[in-house]
Image 1 (tube, rainbow, N blue to C red):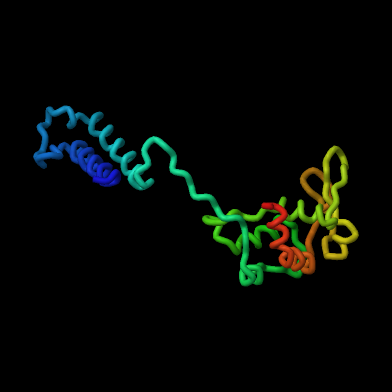
Image 2: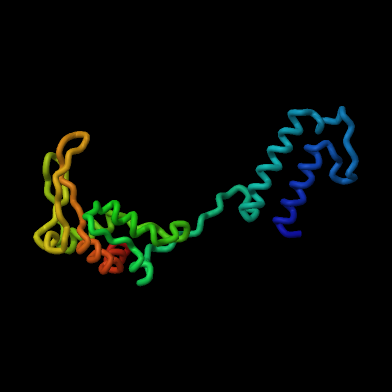
Length: 186
């Protein structure tokens, strides 16, 4: 008898006992039987539900079932072509969200804005400047020429500079997506 069959048989015995039935004969157990005590019966139902979860996990007992590793982010050319590119400049986070909308995140890792940012810094599109006790990113001249722009905005804590990606910059990032992923995951 295989492990899952043993677990299923044990669960059936527990269910029968919890319902006041002798699992071997099918007869109803006497009212004064210990298994007919409400607390014992509830305990048996609980253990039965735990056993059901073990069965659903493929029979793993005492150890967590390891989730299968997700695949490294990648898109086919058709999936790249499906990425929504907008005329209106967007924040990198919004762009990355649209990139990730084209993959099944149950089987594949999502791409991060950090991967894009790190790649753009490494390729001279963005640069870091230390301003007000923080490293901030800004487009370089090359970045500006590729359509990476800045816009001053008013936030909860005052004015700040937002980095936006025009249609041209969005298309550039999609065109270089494979290189960005390769640089990030090595």
